[in-house]
Amino acid sequence: MRSLSAAVLRGAALTGLTTAFAVSAGLATAASAAAPTAPPPGLSCDTGKHAGDDHTGYALCRNNGGATQTFWVHLVCGWSPDVDGEHVTLNPGQSGQSTAHCPGLGTGIGKITVQP
Image 1 (cartoon, rainbow, N blue to C red):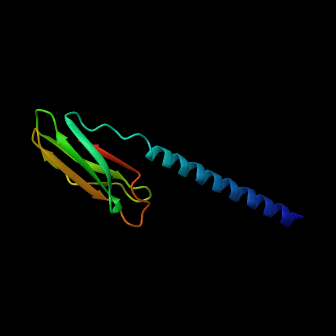
Image 2: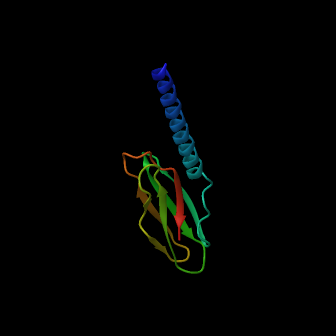
Image 3: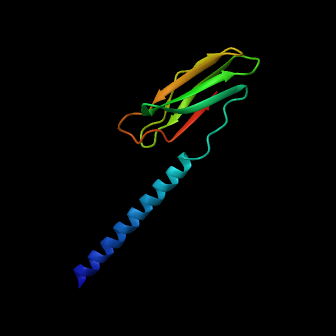
């Protein structure tokens, strides 16, 4: 009877841990799937994943303001560290693109934002 009780307790503990990990992973996924942030004022931007590579993201921006602006793309890469693309400086009326790549062994891009 003692070994049966111990087995039941171990099973319950394992189920509790599995549930806790699932809930925390669900919260992380929900946070990364939040609505995209607005680009910096004066920039109009399109963001997305590269058509041939789900680990490469981009921000294509146009400077609609009256002053020079610098921006870069920021990728949230799931289980891998987040990455930033190259800094792009645009004069008024210019367009440019910043790209970045999440590590291939990770879960891919969870969120793409444009940073000032």
